Length: 175
Image 1 (tube, one colour):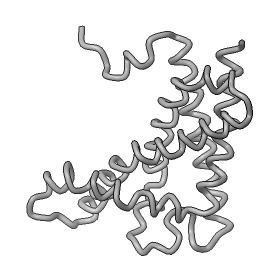
Image 2 (cartoon, one colour):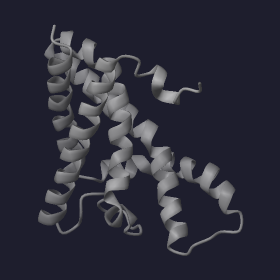
Image 3 (cartoon, one colour):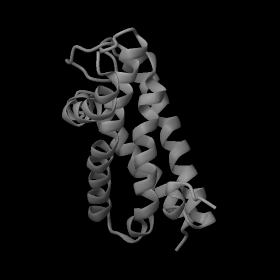
């Protein structure tokens, strides 16, 4: 029987429960944060100062679930170390996870951006290579700017991820 590719990363029932806790709690708080910041701030929550189509606002949940997924995968692997670490190491873990999450999710964000571009009617000649090669590279190139331009969304997200990480580790890995 063929296994799902991530099944080896989430082998035990405890790992699967903590993954779903991290995914659902990070996604719910990220969506609520987006809605709150987007409501209070006229410039929007994503990519402040960057001129781009409004796909990030029209399909914001799709763009939010990507980093939440990668955060959750990393959080499952680091939860025990995080729980046993002192405050300084926990901050280091969260900053490492934030950078790794941006790096891992940016290519998928680029893919999604180009997919939405095509859904809006912009079909280049060689759309498949653009979607599979150029879009992920563009995501890596510009994803950082979009994330860093998302102020105060990104710093607040990093702070909230600390507490989500701590809550999940304490709840499922009680030491």
